Structure formats: structure tokens, C-alpha cells
Image 1 (cartoon, rainbow, N blue to C red):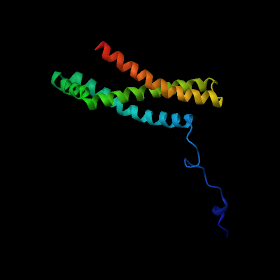
Image 2: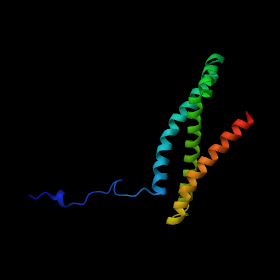
Image 3: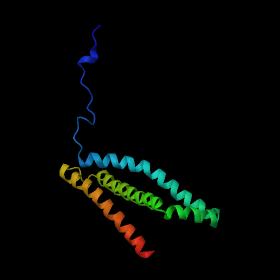
Image 4: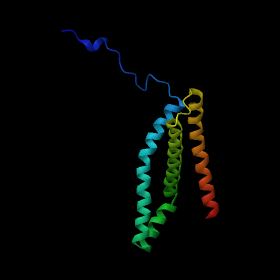
Amino acid sequence: MANVTNNRPLSPHLQVYRLIPTMAMSILHRITGGALYFGTLLVVWWLIAAATGEEYYNWVMWFMNSWFGRLVLFGYTWVLILHMLGGLRHLLWDVGYGFEKEFSTKLARANLIGSIALTLVVWVIGYTIR
């Protein structure tokens, strides 16, 4: 009996493919979807603290206002906006638009740039109102 696996082609993997913007945004969309679970736990933690009492709420707000807490909240804001824009990109594809290679590449780049810009806008507005 011959070994048939020696003549079979290997399945291509990430080492074979060149990283392109649409691939990177697809990977980021999946990662940010998972990261949103962590961010939702932060929102739940804050709501529980608000319902528990003033002392616990003040402690949670102390953490959220620390440099590390703000870094986490900034990251959560970026993840939320990036995932939202990725969802809009997928919605555009679901209705049948944007399949051209050049347009989908531009849309992927715009997704990343737009998410960074919108995150900065949200935080600037937040600090301005504060």
C-alpha cells in the first residue's frame, strides 16, 4: 500500500500569503469581537458598583480614572468603534456592494484610519465636556 499523503499538496497558511489590508481587518474584526466581551465586563462592573453603594462606586471610579484605567477605556473605545465600522463594512457586502478589490482595500484602510480618528474625537469631546 502506497503512502498517498506524500503526493498531496499542503494547505496554504499565513506563511504563504502576503498580509493585505482586507486580511488584516478581517483578523482585527475577529479579535475585537472577542475583546468586546472584556469591555462589556467593565461596563457591568461599573453598573454593579453604581448599584452597590457610594464607597464601592468611588473605588471603581478611582480605578477608571487611573492612568491604567483610562488606557483600558481608551482601548475599549477604539475596539468598539473598529468593530462597529467593520460591521458596517460587512453590511455593505451583505447588500452586494464593495466586492471590487481596489474598493475593498480602500474600505479596509478607511476602517482602520476612521476608527483611530473617531476614537480620538470621542475622547477629545469627552475631555472637553468634562
